[in-house]
Amino acid sequence: MTQPRAVYIHVPFCAHRCGYCDFTLIAGRDDLAGAYLDALQAEIERSPLTEPLDTLFLGGGTPTQLDEPHLQRLLDVLCSAFRFSPDIEFNVEANPDGLTDAKLDALADAGVNRLSLGVQSFEGRFLSLLERRHSSASAVDAFNRCRSRFPNVSLDLIFAVPGQTLDDWRRDLQTAIDLQPNQVSTYGLTFEKGTTFWTRREKGQLDQADDSLEREMYGAAMDQLAAAGFEHYEISSFAQPGFRCRHNQVYWNGGEYLGFGPGAASFVGGVRWQNHRSTTTWIRKILAGKDAVGDREQLDPEASARERLILGLRQIEGIDVTAFQAQTGFALEALGGEVLGQLQTQSLLELTNGVLHLTREGRFFYDTVAAELV
Ligand code: SF4
Image 1 (cartoon, rainbow, N blue to C red):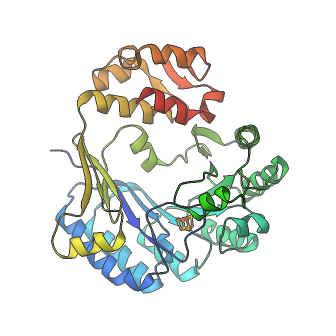
Image 2: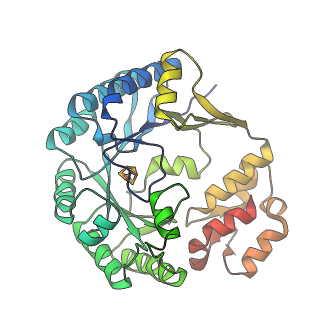
């Protein structure tokens, strides 16, 4: 049986939960780092991988929230548990806050070659509003310190922040471009139920940007980043040629992957499972020798094909209709039925030379397209 060659490690720690964030994380509980690492090591040892990894992605939470000894232990666990292929893409997500040179050196020494920095904005008032703990100056400083150590550095930005104008957003984009990252990822702010932003919006304390402004902002990102030489390769992702994120492409191309840590998802042999999202539950179960999986689902061939269609459409280059049928056994027209035609009539999808892809307008409405095709 083949083994996945892509691994995701979820590191759930953050100093503080930003008001808009609903990720799987535990804030202000750095005291759990030792138990987390014990559990992570145990979970990895249960699923030994002998094949070398092509991609390894440490996400969060904030992996670099771990203090230096715990970060070093995490890297030691990973480097001894996995074999790396010679051209592995070894990614780590980081925050400017608390990103010491010693942590960056430890990452570089362990072979990390792609650093994804969560900057979100370069304007102090929006950083405060988003409850980020770094300043614009410390984000630029962190970026430059990453740039000198890693061959591939990516920046994340958020748009449609309450009160942000189109000009504010264009300035953020330009500041990012001037830093010359290898990738820029842009996300429209969402208000998720259960977050403090959701509650504050309900109470009238925060104004959500209207749809038309958000669309203009997304359009500005597409235009400004393209003009600066970035390829728009996935709805939220713009990369310099040769710097696309290979790990994320595994997800979008329907590839197999293993995830470790609380809330981490895996997809192997048509089965998808996700660990318990609660860090404490996950630690307790793993250390007690129990199964820490929260959900498990065997996808039938049609569900697999549908998922592949939906994930594949996230990629701007779209889906080759002939290759899709050869790989999944399903013709796109049969799977999408009338809905495919309707989405094309609405100018959200387009079929060009045997490739189905989102239109420029459709990129903004991807969630609608995906919901129609489920
Ligand atoms: S730093 Fe990132 S993961 Fe942590 S709470 Fe803020 S947005 Fe969420």
